[in-house]
Length: 183
Length: 223
Image 1 (cartoon, rainbow over the protein chains, first blue to last red):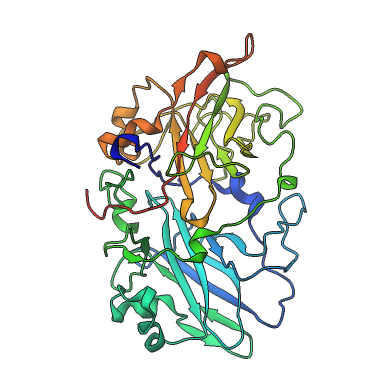
Image 2 (tube, rainbow over the protein chains, first blue to last red):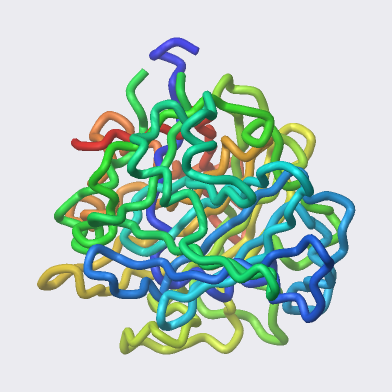
């Protein structure tokens, strides 16, 4: 692609009023989780720690195939894309999604964040079943400052309930690592 | 090549001040996860999803329009069988949303959202109502120019894009910090073109807007 041919369309914010328009593809919290399903709960917060009530997260897990977790759209149709989840934050900035762990190895959820006040989407990741030390050894994360690797890991875990906590800090001292693709 | 995108921090758009990350984005290589993406079944789309004037028992108020164009990948190839979602306010400038307090009437016959799959050549075509301008609390006497929100999945996760389409000749564009956050060289790409060939005689005016997805998805850290 030469510069003269470059016609790439710029991004704009999702704004505050996307709820009903994009709701059809949101996933409900499943009533029953399969044995390798972990519940991820957290918040999207701004620089002051205030919950972002108008954010949308999309979670992409290409390995999570062949499952019908019962998630449906607003008209009761199965969303039938088990690798993909779309969730909204509530009035306090809280969100929930399901991460399906692969046994014996680290699992990664590719998370995209949209919100009023974000002029472009933000890409981050949540790793499960690994540690900051091991992430430091991953070639794909070699550009991440070591002290910020913890933002890609759960802040707390409850093994017996198969649940973890992980929040997205848009800005500030705990700012989450956000990615772009290397050229 | 320079990014077509706005910077994340654009102080004139106030909400970016507390929400835009201040650390630079971290470069990662594109792996298999970025080269694949959700495949939505066409069965999820209803016949009326692409016609926003036909989603109620009655006809919505306002000027009917056709908005159509092609979805292309960064190399200019059409992206077929790909999900496109839109949402917008009604002709009076009011969204059907509990937090929209703009003192303008709701239209019981206009929900204001649609979706479709592009055809094999990447074409999309929506029938809708021309959205109104509306005030917002960003700064004194702030008004959003008429716009339609677009959400695109493209052919893979790296293509994901949410943006806004504007209308040609809108005098509010030069006063809108969200539109002006985009670099001056690429800003015009968000403005549709009036297209007589897309009009439906006696029914609706036509607007053409092509969307070229950005596989890079890089965003400049500062202006």
